[in-house]
Image 1 (tube, rainbow, N blue to C red):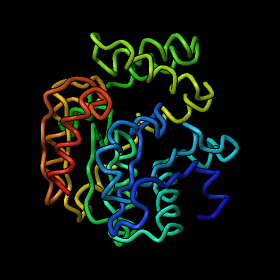
Image 2: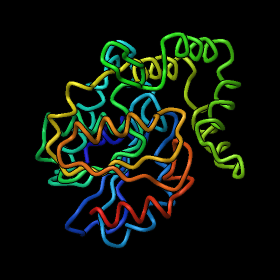
Image 3: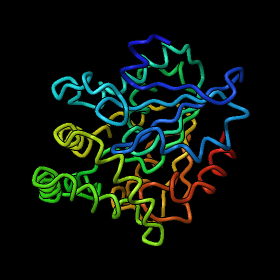
Length: 268
């Protein structure tokens, strides 16, 4: 592993390093690779496991972030491909959460040889509604602008409130607090820049180009990704399967990990 790349994306390799198959876990905005701490226990004996943090979050090198360079999800996809090339990945399984799902999709379209199957958890190709196309993404521009204002005014208060809403497991407040911790660890100006790129991204034109077996995991209610988005993805990705989990919130790999583990195991 190239030291510079390892530092840039905080890459770690665990599990059975001699296994024939590799699983790459990619976390979403506001979390770091510790989000997979419980899930990975179910795969560590049989697979080589790769974890990394996207630039602008987790323990990725903060000096690698530039709001000009990272103004599109394609830059993150290029980072993923650099990791795949550096580690010599071939037909790896991707398990990606939230925005990392679309980063994985873009990477898979650019260089399909690195990946065999993909699992998308709470994925969305566009968060903004598009009335002209009758597309429901879940947000309108005033709602996003209000969120950006809240992030700018008092980032830590916003992080605390947003974490609880997104986790959506009020009976387990420690899970929301866990997300609040990783979200609050991001420098506020970087978090705002990354959030704008994510919430205003639109990769709908790329979806049909994905030629991989795809499992879409969606909870019963998710404030970030409405059910209509999961249906849209399922209708536009050839060879995809949409599975609803008996769970709520945007982080089932944390709040309903047994279901996620079972779904991923049966898929791969």
